[in-house]
Amino acid sequence: MSEQRICKRCLAREMPDAGYFENMYEYIANIDPQIKTPEALYEERLALCKECDNLLNGMCRTCGCFVEMRAAIAANSCPAVHPKWSSLG
Ligand code: SF4
Image 1: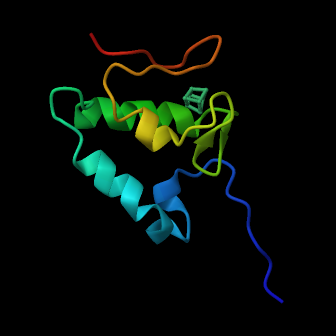
Image 2: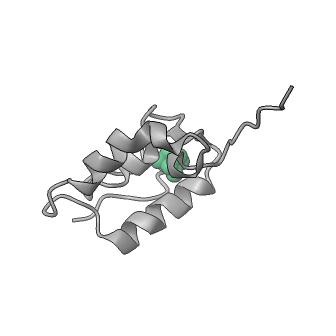
Image 3: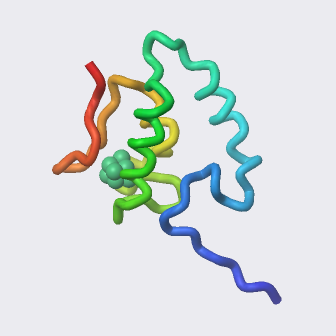
């Protein structure tokens, strides 16, 4: 019997069943560049999420969204009471 690992601070793209999220990645890839977060800022946001206690299995426990999705829209911000990243513009 294999032991199932729980990936607390993983992004969805880092999980063993990342293929399950293909539709999300396709959606992110096709976001209108006018509203999409620039790549460098996107990775900065995700790095902050990875250090956050609210990240669980790729989801933010504060809002219930997948952080890779939330971070991909420039106007979005971290939903925490003390936000770790903010909207662009
Ligand atoms: S609270 Fe903010 S930093 Fe933490 S996982 Fe959610 S979106 Fe990311």
